[in-house]
Amino acid sequence: MTLSSFIYALLAGILPSLIWLWFWLREDSERSEPRWLLTASFFGGVVAVLIAIFVEKSISDVVSDNNTKYILWAATEEILKFVAVTVIVLKSKYNDEPLKPMIYCIVVALGFAALENALFLLEPVRLGAIAQSIVTGNMRFMGATLVHVVCSAVIGFSLGVTFYRGVISKFFAIAISIVAAITLHSIFNISIVRADPNDILKIFAWIWLAVVILIILFEEVKAVKPRSGDFSPSIKSNTRIKYTSKINI
Image 1 (cartoon, rainbow, N blue to C red):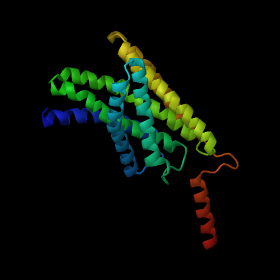
Image 2 (cartoon, one colour):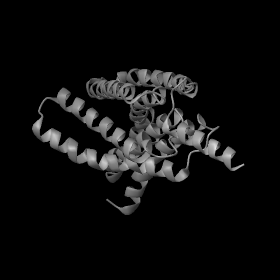
Image 3 (cartoon, one colour):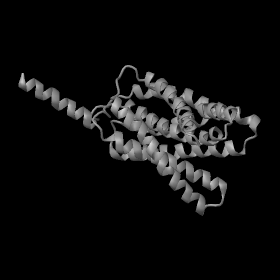
Image 4 (cartoon, helix red, strand yellow):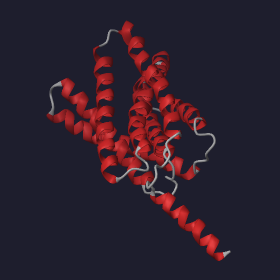
């Protein structure tokens, strides 16, 4: 493979993710996210792909049933994306309101999808199948990239709605959302493999429906407020700062 074809595949894989990144950040236009943390989250998703490649190769070596394999692959990807969010964002001081976990889950998912898309495009680009690479890129833009976004956003939503809740509530919400994300991802993978080429767009239709629901969930998370007695670490910190300021004055 030539350097130019590699660059083409890389750019074609990243571009859809950047377009979706711009779209989703517009949903949070009233709040500014630190660029360095957005970048770190995006590349956290990229690193998760590299780890997933080795894990999924190991799964393929020991699992012969295709359905089981696809489910385990989906579980690997969703768990690794969640780990990336946990390591990079959840303990950050910038994770200071309910919508932030959902935003960063989506950014990590887009980083994951960017490299995954590029890897899928490498072979048709290497063979000079430009038409095939364009079709593949468009299909991943409409389908696979959004699957990653929707599945990770489900987990982000659970983090958002329990932002001011206790550890136990958060634990159960995260556990349920991870199972839901794996289920959605597995259904998509199995459906795509089994589907007739004429039915591909029908499969993508429910992904687009999920995106519409996701936009609604964005608004729901924006409306999450602390109940009486509910305080996140960031709220406690802000309260202490205001109190200290009054004393100093």
